[in-house]
Image 1 (cartoon, rainbow, N blue to C red):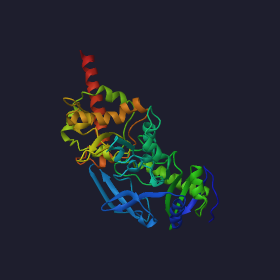
Image 2: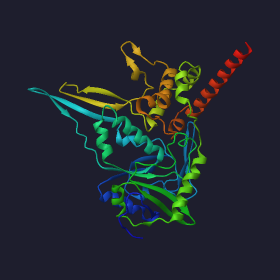
Image 3: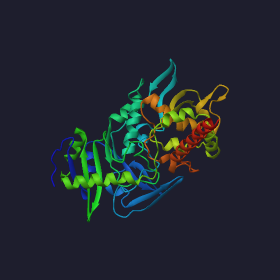
Length: 390
């Protein structure tokens, strides 16, 4: 093993025993390492310092409305599938002060909040999650208006992606062309393998920053056989998806089905709790709140995460535009899978399955879409048959 400076596009091998040295190198380069760890009965993303904090040996079971950790079959550090936490917690915090004002003898003094973000290294970003970050980039960086706070955080982020070698019960990233292998946008991409007692990572170097960090970590060039093992492990996951979603013609179907009875049926089950939007890695809606102290001497403006499932989200003078659960669920799903294309040129869904797992009543997006597709096909067939026999 040696530590030479690789170049972007190189594929190297890192033994699992040296993974802590990657953490140490990131720290020396000035990054705060954010990664997965077990807390309570789930995997969360938080600041971690050592490899020993990773969820080694843990896996999970996910299905509609259910999540459970379980011991895995080996010692893999990344043998789980994504839980409720998303990387937007660090790129666009749920609560952020925008400015404050204080009354003085000369009037009010306004101070714009300067939220200087730290340099973050995200450890264990999955393909679907990286696609979600890129979608938020398109919305918040490359549109008509740039979110300066998001931009500052994004520019300071180092991404250590992890290719999936296992699919979860709610995953459908293949249907959304968002995984299970990362395509671009990473500094380093790891594929974890346990073969005949050996535990190692095949590492793809994506950027000069990634090459600079990897130069400080013992590694060697990956052999052709090791690269093939990594490719095969990831390719096998594509056949293990817990869900599928047929996207051909879906945008047009949703536009034609705004008054379909299926929305009423779903609305009768939906609690409008907003869980699906909170765990979704691409949802970005927010509200603005102004607050003052009791003396009236100071005032602050805060941006806080919001959800299209709340009645206040669409409130205008006289009431909420979307007062029913039916209309709110229809708005959310149609925006994700149809109108998002019109606004941002991409789907708002990456197939991570979080909205399925964390819905307390087990509403399954993929199942409801498939049901709408089946019902509309049957209705069209029945109409055509009536016309042919008329």
